Image (tube, rainbow, N blue to C red; front, side, top):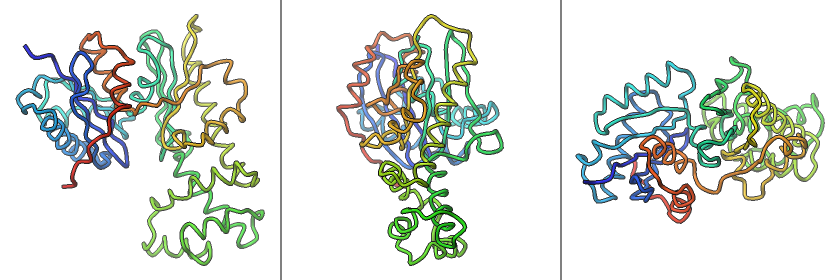
Length: 332
């Protein structure tokens, strides 16, 4: 009798990873496709297409996928109604045995923390999301943006604020900053005003401003006061999220883990991580802080293995993903 399969999904705004593992934790296939934060039906279609590719790569049939437990950790699964709508759309695809839906921050948390450990996870990528768990309880901030008291994204926020600061430096409303020249150079414009004009005309899309994020991190590290303030404010918010999430639980005797991930924390120079340590030095006394090496889809796989009561080694699962490169799925 074939071992039960786990279909692990980490779906974000820019990419979606889908992997197949067996109940022993062996990685059978792993494919990567476009972002899947597209609304329930379109999300389900993207996940189904990538799952079909993963099954093919593993040398299995669609019929064998029918008994799999799918764990879909998805951006945009923030509120209960959103989670239910996604679960319904994915169930209606009728290609797997059972499906579990949660926010993609839970995949990050499981990637960096053992199943029973009290832990907080903070995703700091295009958006900003915080989740926590302890004693079989879960907590998460909505992460919807200003409407729910959150900073409006993380990477998106840094990019927008870099343009804002550069514009104010250009017309004299704000202090001088190296961001002014750097922003113009990286967006290939003659002035910051041109950025606004091109955004208004649609010649420049806001998502293209993402190239400015490493610029802000670099200038903050080099001591530009304006860039430093932008990064420091975000670092303070990360620490505030972690501490507030932990306070939702009764005191525990176990040590807490803080798992940090997303594009800003995968920076190879560790500048955002250093900013968090500098902004909240006491955080190290409250948490064991780490940035996982393995991708979040490994956490989705571990969540699935938790559910099928498997005895797979967590280290083995993480190592399998670290030693493998996903196949890039062809666009539709």
